Length: 218
Image (cartoon, one colour):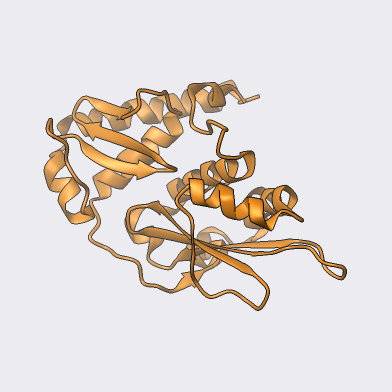
């Protein structure tokens, strides 16, 4: 279960960011990010196969479904940064991206990569199917015998998944890499939240609703 004090903290952060959004020039912030505006001036941000619409009135999903406040907060932060940065085309590890903020590499291995290894060991074709449902595509440099996939987590914010399926000698392996310009588009802590949501969606399948309000209570 979610710690109620943490949930309350997320709600306050979201409420504060909504207030910032109310004062923001949506069109001016969307322009450097290359985000489209719909007919009523909402900035459109794709995330995990859904379209999120941000305006001075707040955040909503185009399909009318609910979403977690941590996701809404992350998308607001992405828009408020209004970055002109574009992918460098060079991928680094989670720890390298964080630098001194993240001296230990355990989180990436245990919370992010281990669920991928466990879910898709012996099921590489299933990985390709689920990845495609989340916008993943073959690409990037991987080792011999690996599956290498690229994802646009958010516009201009790319990550790479390198997956080696298990064989007679070795267990399955998974490595998540991030474009080295990722933190120019989104702060590291918020990026970590979105990547965790991404891993949940990938490992629980295309039919799972990883960003529903019900997920808040999981």
